[in-house]
Amino acid sequence: MKFQQLCLLGLTGGAIALTTTPTFSQSSSDSSVNFRCNSNQEIPTIVIYNKAKPKPEPLIYWNSKYIVSKDIVKDCESAAQTLQNHYNARKEFLAAVDGDSFAPQTRVCLTEQPDDSCAFNSSKLLFILKPEVQESLDKDLPEIIHPNLAQLEPKKLATAQFRAVRRIYYPKIQPRTFWQKLLGIV
View (cartoon, rainbow, N blue to C red):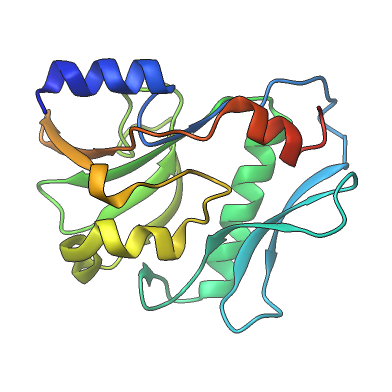
């Protein structure tokens, strides 16, 4: 796909990568929705707790087979706190899967703008993928990111070169109504 088509696809789909926009009324001290690292399992998992739902929903699986980490539980907890802070600040959930051509690491982060990369100071790093994951990213990413966070269609993954940054665009984004249901707003 041409870069313009990818940009159009990103804009019409919501933005780069894993875009969701929870729009609802809340205070920053509202504890009805919480992002937590559930480390009581074999693979630590970031889950979202919602008082309106009977059980937590998984979002990100912290499998050390795919993610670079010295302390996987601590990093999982840190990323859960990043998601919670982002939620409390009522910011748009824009996540980029970003591979800089000058670095052997692919990063997954929250960004402020649809065209930001994980290198920007305003981005919030969630995790770094192991170099070997880059070879099979379309197969491995769905093993890390649960469909609750983004609806991944590996056969339709596309990449583009832009300012020495390779970004992954996901053509099918979870609709806003999904997040409203997940967060108990509908």
